[in-house]
Image (cartoon, rainbow, N blue to C red; front, side, top):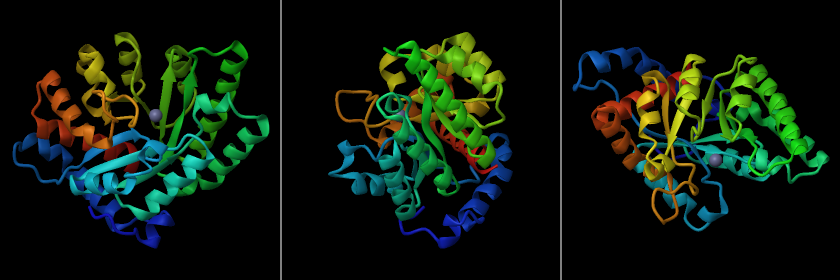
Length: 290
Ligand SMILES: [Zn+2]
């Protein structure tokens, strides 16, 4: 996949050669497992949740995106407010391997005035058609008052209604709020991935039963959440860095760390590296292109 400008067709949402290639690939995915190790598809690495728009990447954002492209790595960038959403869309128009999500982070909501929240939601509503998915949105109860929690829930419901209307997948942040999140999601018909999954084993099982994607982050490398990695259903596992956050070491995290993460997941799940890479890529295609 190159890094040149994308075609105008892509912006208008029409099926492009890339999308058709993904559809063809999906037809072959069952054969990957029947005829391994002979792979019929060129799978890609996927960082399904990161913040390449973060100011910590201001000095070298373009070179990181180009390096990721050279390694066949797709960057699904999550916006957090109107400014990062706009930059996310700009990067998507410039680089084929960047997919722009637009969102309103729960921690941003509680810092904003009512008019600012309404402005950000209106921007999301008008730009959703140009976005790849909706993110970062969710619930974060850490250190929040009851009023703030209620505001987060109220806004999240509006965003889920928007995603349902626009048929956009949602990549979700959940901190200390898993029960409420699963409860709210159960009343919507949306495709969703729980990013940096922080639930326990039974919540992981329930999320899988609901068909929710479960994203393993580079933070799992540090915190050794091996039992969760083993528990995720094959067709629902995703990989992410949440970079620049959730570094597996003391350095700034980057989307490139998806590669050692896949190595780690392979070892824990008893699959080889290529099988794991292909599995996660096929899940990505099904989630976002079906
Ligand atoms: Zn994030």
